[in-house]
Image (cartoon, rainbow, N blue to C red):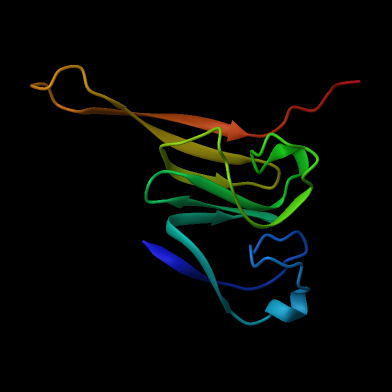
Length: 133
């Protein structure tokens, strides 16, 4: 598990998670970021990023347009630091798209102590539905 990642490029919406809205010029070379969270995998899109911890927690940062950070709070427009998505756990995979985030969950079922452990997966999309007018 890694708590440090290198990132560069645009950070207009806080998608690098470095705690500030530095301009593109400030991150034109790879820069080390330390999150103090054990990161097992990550995904990035145009204006938001996400990572999964070894414990299956999901953190998102960047633009929250259309609810793609999964924070259930539309008053948060941008997060320049990683935010825990509290409504979801047991995440084993994450993918960020232009206006959505998709995760795969591990759902562990144990029916009896003498039977094998069964693991199934579920996929959820973190995207707010638009109201049709």
